[in-house]
Image 1 (cartoon, helix red, strand yellow):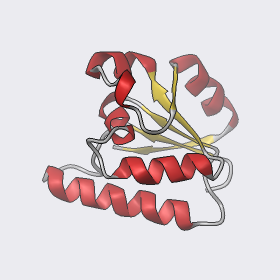
Image 2 (spheres, helix red, strand yellow):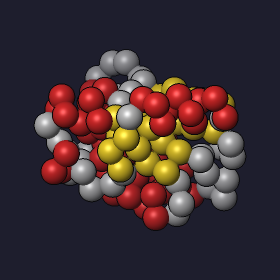
Image 3 (cartoon, helix red, strand yellow):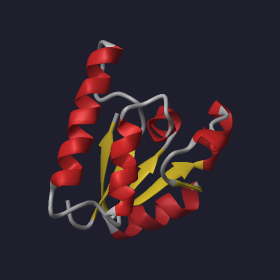
Amino acid sequence: MNNKVILLTADTFGKGEAELGETVLETFVTLLKQRDEKPIAIFCMNRGVLTLTPRSLVSVHMKELEEAGVRVLACKTCVDYYGVADELLAGEISGMPIFLELADKYEVITIS
């Protein structure tokens, strides 16, 4: 995962049942934080910003990734849309210009 940016666009992983998708996403993020090589950043947009709030079990793992040096970013437009600015347990509010800078420098892996 070195030199990669994860674009997280949903609060689940994959299409189908939401409960299953939440479990799969939690497993993915748990395994990601256990790896020696971690991504440069995780940029959360659309419903992905909800993974940074108490609404998602993933938020605990995102906080741990942030503490391990992974830059965790939340799309400001999306945070405002969902009204979760005061609920973020991890991450910093950011914008599309930062994502574009990261995408210019690093490979982007999209999780939706």
